[in-house]
Length: 235
Image (cartoon, rainbow, N blue to C red; front, side, top):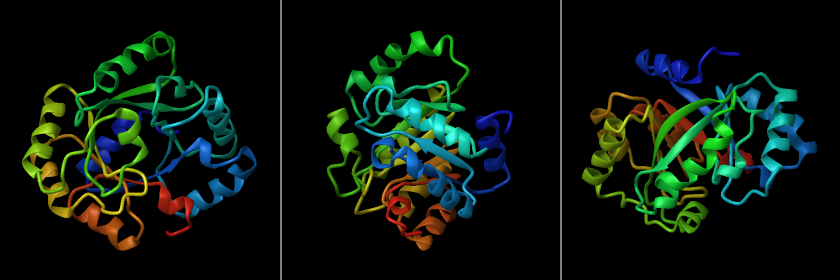
C-alpha cells in the first residue's frame, strides 16, 4: 500500500508519469462480480479504483468497498455523490467541492454533513475542486446537483474556476464531462487548465478509446478516470 495517495499523485505529476483510475458504481455491480471485475482492472494496470455513484442506498458502498478490499491491494478512493457514501473500508476520499455550480449543497453543505464521520475516520482526505464540463448529455451528476456545466468553448471560465480552486487550497482539480458523456473534455480545455495550475489534474467523462485516453494524457491530464467504457468492456 502506498503511504499517501496524494503524494503518489503529486510525485507522478512532477515526473510526468500518467495514472489511471477505474470508476466503479456500487449500483451497477453485484458483490459476486467483484472478483472478475478486479481481474479486469489489474489487466489494465490501473493505479486506483474510484468508488461512487449519484444514487446509492445507505450501506451499499460500505459493503461494496469491503468486498473490493478482500480482492485487491489497489488503493480505493471514494468519489461520493452523497456524504452517506463515505466508509472507512476505503483508503482515501476525494473531498469534493462542486466549483462549477452555485448550489451550496455541493459547495459546502454535503461536506459539513460528512464531518462527524470524518473526524474519527482513517481515510486520507484529499481536498478536490470538482468542475463539470458540458459533455453533451444531461448526466446524473447534473440532475442531482441541479447545476449547469461549463460550456466547452468557455475556456476562460474553466481556467478561472480551476485557478480559484487552487487558490482556495484544493490539492487536485477534477474536470468531469459526466458519466456517459457524448463529448470528452476538449484537448484545448485540458491544456489551458493544466498550463494555469500547479496542482495535479484529473480528467474523466466519456473516454471510450485508447486514442481518447492518450489524447487526455498528451494535453496535460495527470490522472484519467474511466467508468462507462470499463463497464461496457470498451477498453
